[in-house]
Amino acid sequence: MGRRAPSRSPLPSPRPSRRAAAGRVEGRSATPRVLKSVGKLRKLQRPHPYPGRLIAVEGIDGSGKSTQLLLLERWLIAQGYRVHFTEWNSSLLVRRSMKRGKKKDLLTPTTFSLLHAVDFADRLTYQIVPPLKAGMIVLADRYVYTAFARDVARGVHPDWVREVYGFAPRPDLTFYFRVPIEVSLQRLLTGRTKLKYHEAGMDVGLATDPVDSYRLFQSRVLDNYDKVTAEFGLRVIDAAADIPSQQKTVRREVDRMLQGYDGPRTEKQQNGRRRRETQ
Amino acid sequence: MAAAAAKRSKSWYGHGLPYVTMGSLPGHLIVIEGTDGVGRSTQIERLSPWLELEGWAVSNTGWTRSPLLSETINEAKAGHELTTTTMSLLYAADFADRMEHQIIPALKAGFIVIADRYMYTVFARNAVMGMDAAWTRQLFGMALVPDLVLYLELDVAHLIPRVLEGKGMDYWESGMHLALGADIFDSFTRYQTQLIEEYNRLARQHRFVNVDARKSVDEIQDDLRAHIASYLQRSREAAARRKPATEPVARLRRS
Image (cartoon, rainbow over all chains, first blue to last red; front, side, top):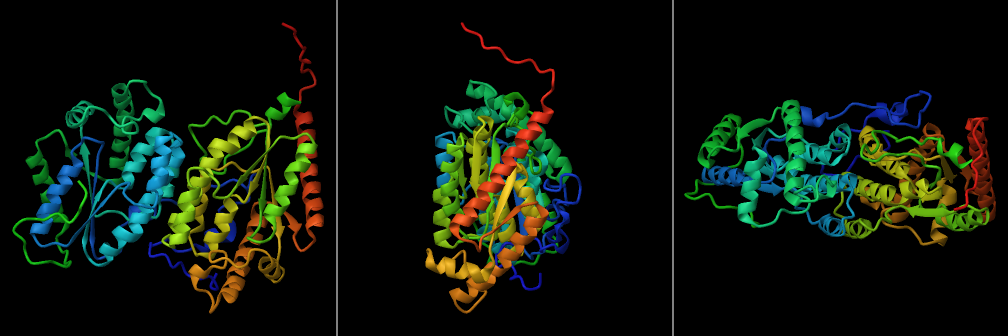
């Protein structure tokens, strides 16, 4: 064990476990080639070790979470905080595979889930951990809870997807923007005329009509989000309320979470200027 | 025979794929494992024609050969931007794609699937990289447990000349990303020594059938065929035992 090179990955990989490496994973039962359930979710259940702060927003499409995160970002920057924004499914690493898979409908629930995990791991390495180590505030539009809610609605095993993301650090604060299906549907359909294929869960084959499919699929997702909220203590925001009152709650919670935070600051700016380029 | 063989059940390694009904998988999943340069592909090339002559339909599947991910993986490797975590996840995605679109359908149709490498490759590499062994195993909880794993076992002293005579020492297979040695030769030697140790450990844990890869290509091929033939024989016998004595003989019907 001692001769092994340490992982050079900047990603905070779990320490190599002597116990597991010694082969107890397989146990000595009648079918030793089959995996026994072992410890899980170590990281997601305890605070991360970095000086920075990690804030995530969750919710189904049309819940208004991105709008709220943008308003939060403006406010934080205006106060001089150094902020880094990162978004689900935005890494270049798997963009081609994702596109190809979606276009040709090649993705299964498992490969869909794993490609998102690659995206997340890649962003964790390059976009989340370094700013956290530098003491900055990282804002994540969707986090691993999206996978726990969405991939499970597509059919993967709830324990498996939690294990896959076992390397993810726990955010200091995660907001869940809970919204009724009809409200989200209305919001999505006012901006454009059609629902996206995967957003509507058309790949799951619940209904042939996109709107029907959206209702069925997203209500599964909502059910899973409720489980996730209870399991990981997400802060629920009523996303059907008006935008300023939601933002007020968000800022109050963030302010409280930032008590004792002593990260790098810029001079106060009059207008919070966005550091991100997309949208 | 077909009905009885169909009862032979395969198992998932971990949680499996809840949305896939495994049903009957009368085919056989045979894995060839072993470190890079040990001669896996040469051997596999010769196995398929032999099995086909024996009357078996064969489907070959190999590491990073999925249409979904092969390009992405090759590009990412060239760019050196991967961590052990992202690499493992990409391998898992490639593997899952091949399993769902190729391996399981072939097994359903009664084929012999020959897999060039399997999840054990990631287990071995990640162990050398110091990754959490439990995480790597859980990741592949969606895999089918193979029926037979043939492990081409070769020590590093015998491996080196074979690799140098072949395609030479490759950046990744030499563990250059680990900076283990002053040059590629030292790095290769150290990395492969550790990797082979891990493979040997896995061979014991997962009941691989070890094949001495120091032998000549022909001798290795003979050994592999003997092991496969004996496995197929045992599996036929087991199926015959499970076949109920009272099972009615299917009658041909003309329409």
